[in-house]
Image (cartoon, rainbow, N blue to C red):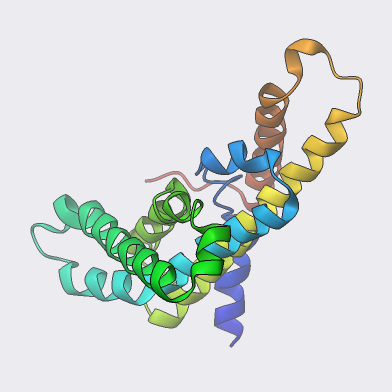
Length: 196
């Protein structure tokens, strides 16, 4: 249990997909929405990561060490996400039409954004994630941390709308500066590891 919480915390804060890894530009564009829609988008992204986890872990264990692993790794993970998207789209449209009306337009963005594919690829190359429970913890933490990061940036945008900000910094430039400062703080907190 402690191992699960450690991996979850690392993915949630120290390796945050938006701040530390700079994944997902769609999430930043989505900040104009209300927090309920941001939570729906984050929950959908987390759910897709959690459902994709066992499939991606199985494929990683099956292909790891083969001659074609480096060539097909990204493609296989993309195919896993495509199959999940198609299945979720068809099932939700058929059996859950009311939920599909609410979150159907976010489904392609949650399934095919850089945060989901990047998270799957990061766990594929991380040698410390050597069990399904660690991979599951990483994906849960990555999705929750991504959602929290989007909510934090939405909150900052709301505060900046009422502030006296120079015209050239309003909107997206100030958001990028904020993301950069938070990323810098996270790197300072966790340190960097350069390849040897």
